[in-house]
Structure formats: structure tokens, C-alpha cells
Image 1: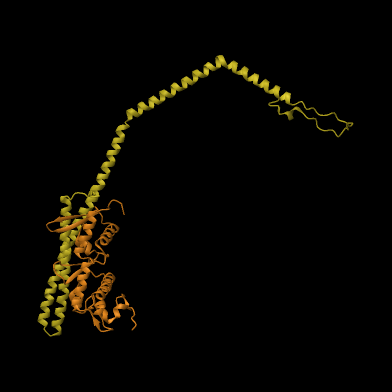
Image 2 (image 1 turned 90 degrees about the horizontal axis):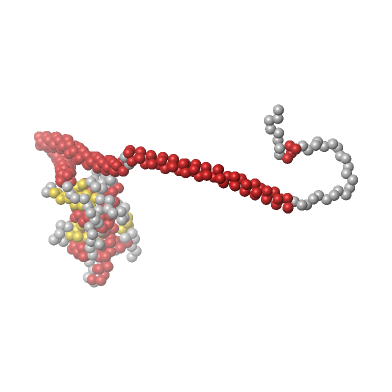
Length: 205
Length: 193
């Protein structure tokens, strides 16, 4: 504990804003005061009228009028001050937006520095080269296979095929039993052609 | 004797003890009086909270037509608080730290702490952030007399300053002083809330 959380420094700007706002407060308080005086003068005028002192009532009302004009004046002043304050505060927001933009721009620049067109071009070139090299190697490897070993491969394949056929033959030795009854000639059935074995004549002229 | 609670015109529910005549008289027995004083303190603070009253003066018991009429007097039983009694209660409140003499160095009027400065600090910070006034410089007048009423409207400067001091310690506020007066700036804080 005891570590003070950092707070921004108070700048001359801050002081100026505070000063403006305090001035504004003073005006507001002044207005409040005048409003109270206005109400009082009105009451006084009424009292005088009730007492039949017309001239005195007129004086009170005149004073009231004067105060009223003061109120209007302070109103415009207050408006000016408030406008100034809000303009300053808006400018501060703009400054922070500008600062944000600047930082973003900086970051973008940094990134671009690491990724300029020359290096990208070079990188792409290198990739292209590497790819070509790779295809070359593949082609070379494929070539060596066809010349010498392709035949051996084919031979081995045939051998395996033959073995498989041999195995199948060895397994299928169950022959159908001899019929015990006299065969009866049934109605003529259409002869089974070779097409049933999967061989379909293609392009017969 | 049956005592009942009573609702005042301002909508405050008076406790039944408020209808007991002895409650308005200082008791010679210190133990009894201490209990009565405790009740009075609680009553004063809850009433102050209800009406948002910040100060209590000894003379409030002498005059009528002030904000405290509803509890310092009970016309139904024809009793009222005597100024000397109220003065003693104020003294007890200051001792219990639920009020301070304001202005200091006198014993006639106090500022009531129906919220502690810490609670006010929280309310103040919440108000500032909910109204989007963080990071802007504000005058005390901005806080005590805002265009839209808040719970901080009319808070005594003394209490406001204490609340700001609490926030300053937490790094959530900064006081700016110039020749013309003082201002304050609130910060979001460190997100530990």
C-alpha cells in the first residue's frame, strides 16, 4: 500500500478552464441574487400600492426594471462564457481524437516499414523459385522410377495378381452335387448371354 | 399507556417513542438518558436522510417553522425539545462521529453525517461517471447545484470536500486550486469497483 495511483498533471490549460467555470458560477450566483431582488422589489411595490403610496411603488418598479435589464445582460454574458467553455472542452476532445489518429498512423507506418514492396517482391520471387525447384525435383524422381523400376513394379503387380487368383481358386472347391431326379424340360427360357457377366459391347458397328 | 407510530405530513414514520412525553425531557439518570439520546440520534439521522437535511442547529429547537418541526415537537402530547437538551444531543452526535460542528469552534450547529464521507464519495463518483463528467474539470458549484437535481444537490461544501478527499486518496479524483477557488476532476479509477 501507499503507492499513489498516477493522476494526470494539472496543466495551465486545466487552470484556465477552471477559472472560466468559476467565473460562470459567479455569474450564475449573481443571477440568482438578482432574481431574489426582483421578487422582493415586486413585493415591495405591491405593499406600497396597498398602502396607497403610488410614487414609492413606481420607484420600486423602476428599480426592478433596472435589475431586470441587468439580468438580461448577465444572461448574454453567461451564454458567451458557456459557449467558450464548451468550445474549449470540445477542442480537447478533438485533440485527443487527433492524438489517437496520429498514433494509429504511426503504427501503420511501422508495419509498412517492415513490409515494403521490395521485400514482398523478393519474398514472392523466392517462393516462386522454391516452388519451381520442388517441381523439378518431383519430375526428376518420377523419371528415375519409370526407366528402371517401373518394369519391376509391373512385374510385382502381376505376381500379386496371380497369387490372388491362385488363392481364390484354392478356396472354391465346393462343387454342386449331382442331380438325383430326371431333368424336366421346362418352357424355353431366354439364353443367358455373355452380357450378364459385365461385358457390354461398346461401339458395335 | 399505548404508544403508536405516526406518519408526518412529509411522509416520515415517527417511532412510537416519539409519542412518549418523557422522551422530550432530559432524564436525571445518566443511563436512561444515554438510551434516550441514542434514540434521538437515530431519529434525527433517519429524518435527515428522509428530508435530505444536512444541518441541525440548536436554535431549531427554539424557533418554529423550520425543517425540524416534525420531530423536535410533538403537539399531540404538547411536548417539545428544549434547546439545552438538543445541545447535549448534538454534542453526543459529534462524539459518535455522526456529525461535526460546522463552522468549527462552536457548539450551536452541526453538519449531519447520515452518510459517511466514504459513502458520499461513492455516491459522488457514481454520479460523476453516470452523467459523463469524468475527466472534466468541475467546480464545487457544479456539484452542489447541478442543472438536473442529483442526490448531491445542496451537499455542504465541508462534506463534499471530505468525499473528494476520500476519492483523491483512491486516485479517483484530483483537486485543482487556483486563486479564484477550487475545482475537481474525477477519474474512472483503476477498475477495482
